[in-house]
Length: 337
Image (cartoon, rainbow, N blue to C red; front, side, top):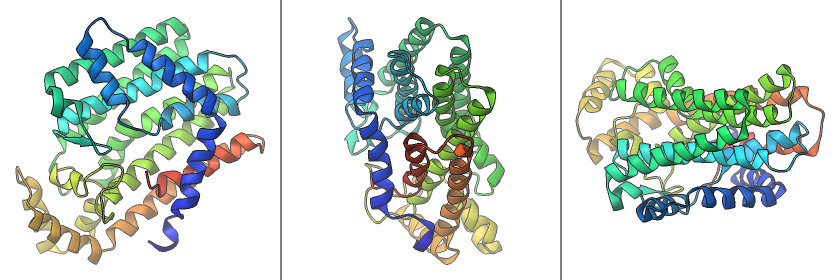
């Protein structure tokens, strides 16, 4: 990938630096999540524990905590509570995603739906969201409640929009960006803006952190979509070609459709219309990916959003907290976990 993608070592260290900076608070977030997921219904506790213990970077929680720290939040508990809320929203959407995608693995571990079935997984996802909304009401900040509740609605809209356009090889890039903005970037931006709300920051700072989070989320998802056609081995438990076999049209496919000749476009239309795609279909598609350097083009697009995200924090004083958040933008492009 050349200069387009930063070195994994520096990308990973940026994430680890943020995690180490906030390690004590992040542990309190983990403890609070465990406490809130206690239930008299044994299956709920068993399933939620399995899902939450299967790994995960807790990146959105870290963004909430890091943004609150950057903007001078000094109190002791609200950042913990709302970081846990953000993480619960994310966890709930993953439970629902796995059902929609009929996924059997997440992060290399069996999904809850593959063990306990789709019905239970949907209901436990709903349970996580319900607990999250209880915590938001307890917090009592109407601005944050409005922000996180509207974000939950955006994520659901993004899922439906993606289903609506599933298998469309001629998907517009603009529509693709709309989908990932709703599905992924909206929660990133909500996490970072929540941090600013906690500190009672002015509107300029809130907008700056919202922009930082949104563009970070866009870069994160675009890079993830590129890896579906790029990685030579299973990466963070994600099967290579997973999006392709599920009929999801992402930026690498959009790129080759835009650049391909008439015959190649027809080929893409036909295979994406299929109920099931074969390994041979994937191999032929990969050949087009390489021919038109679609992965490189996709990373270039992600790099654009990384730069916008980085620059969004320019209004803040040059501190260690700011540097760590800016360095984190490289993690979205080339992470090894």
